Image 1 (tube, rainbow, N blue to C red):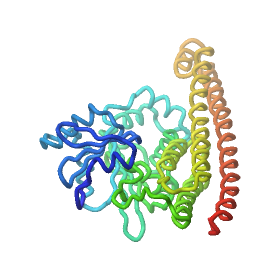
Image 2: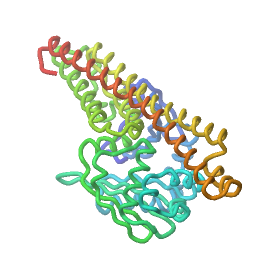
Image 3: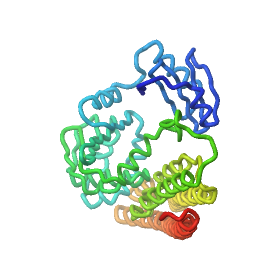
Amino acid sequence: MGLKESLPMRLIAKAEGGYTDTIQGMEAAWVPSDAYFVEIAPKTMGLMHPANRQAVSRWAETQKTRATSPLSDYLLGAVSAVKTGPQIVLALDVQNSVQPHRVHQSLSQSEVVQKQKLDVDEITAVITSMKGLKLRVTITDKARGSLQVDFGKPVTFNERAAKGLLLGALTNLQTELPGVEDWDVKVSGNTILCSGDTEPDALRRILSMLEIPTTKFSSLKEQDTNEATGDVMARNSLAYFKSITKLTDDLEKNSKSSRGDNYWMDRYAQKIDRLPILHVDPDLLDFGQKTVETLRVMSGARKSANMSSGVRQSNIVSSGGGGYDGYNNGYRNSGYYNGRANARSTMSAMNTAKLEEAAGASSTKIEGFRRINNATSEMRRLMTERYNIEF
């Protein structure tokens, strides 16, 4: 990042409770939020998270010597796109990282594939040729986003199927974005392109992936460590409270899916952890910590459900000889119709296992939001009475 003026690493280290370091002859600061800041030049600062010192050292050396970028051509192309319009670009290079057998298995269970009567083998070949994806956000009087998925082979399915598969992938990855279901989808050659307006809550989720891992970076020089007056305590506490309620409201409002948002719960818990806490009411800080713990319990319930569901499905396949191997065995040994019946029975049992585990996670989520809402109401009343301002 380019700076208007130099910012000493010791200030960052002191404000964050970290320490200074020297990496490849460059001044650096490690901060407890698991990041390294490096002064590459007097007005140029680098940031790497997580704080793997060896990785930071090698990366800093390339910056110092201006060696050839270690980025792939795909990622370099995404970086160059920032100069031509969108202010935000997130790119993911996935070439040769997708396992065909896992894709085939997931697609075989996909409702989109079944409803559209798509050829699983054909779609698997397309998906496994994926090169990467780019999420662009252009901000004017409103935010407009586009998600581009690039493949090494022509996309052989239509826009409706493409949209269904993309939304399903976001759900499976626990990264659902509010409003994306209303975006337009186009299929052209080797590319799927989705675009549409990006609502503030969706933009907030996207920006949560771009946060600088420090709470005080933007105001280090103005950082006041003296005792707070009542007005300062009230103002900082109100800002802290509003930040938490905005984040939890976003999560609850967009929690329609029982299984598509635990990634955002983790991210928002991390955001709350990193909120500025200087001169914030101690009772409010306890409330924030309890909120973080509740969000992580809710997220953990979803992850546990996924694991339990996977174990149960594996046991079903192992005990019944079902699944895709069972389908093939049944087809060969029991005749066509018996083979199909066995496969359908196994798939039905596997789907039941998934639904039962998801229901348990959904109950935990509902209870979690109930507790957060009750605690929020109590804290709003307490803080309003204490500081005589409306929280």
